[in-house]
Length: 346
Image 1: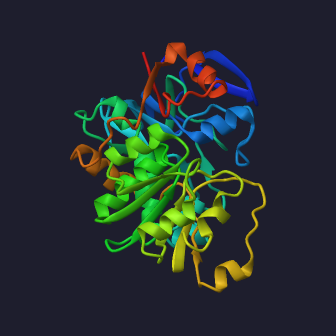
Image 2 (image 1 turned 60 degrees about the vertical axis):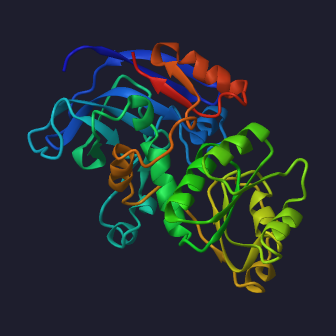
């Protein structure tokens, strides 16, 4: 395809350029060209822009929550065709390392993540290997299609945490990912999910997504409140989706997480935490890492097509690609009303 397109480049932290460049060509017959239609704005995009993402390199095109239309296909492509609506995986992997061959490709030893270590989707067109592209029904609105990737994270991390129906779940942070983890736990059948945040509006939203109890850590003692809710037993699994320095140790304290509990941190804070071996071993806790997702896109797309998710209110702010400066303004001037941005391409 001939012509020009626009792309957004974070040249270095806090420095952004909008460039006009040629529409990319297919590098081989196994690739597809995607015309972007929507892209979610993730916390990692904020961190890339502010220079706080330890996995990022510069210059970099942000964006790993990407949805679009197939504009061109290579001769070997059979899974999608021109005109299909698609979701693009955020990772490229080698396929041959220990991790890839043992069901852990999300932590491939040479993984490249779009929008972080490789260029992402904040551009009008980009190419990707067909194996990293998944068809989605054209009945799914672009506003929702951009949310497939974060919902896939919710599926993956609850799987990593081995969440089952009789678990008592604690979720610290009820932003986008916390709210999605909440929905994932309730879909599994968990009858007690406790959400904790410092924002009353976020906690009120969590109630709408099925939270059984909410705690404002600004005004309440979290451990005491959890003991009260659980009859002193604590929670069987905790998710840290707030991810500030000290949040992991906070979730692991007695009273919040029970003996034999599972702790699933979701962030990339590089600040040291005050965690000792005794904190883990006296109660035989499992600390379980969770990064991105593994084999979760296709089942998540199916659930999205079947309207099994409560997507209303997850994305709060929709911004045209032609007005991309508004995205970076809100990154510099956070608003409680703009909990999750989605870019819609003109």
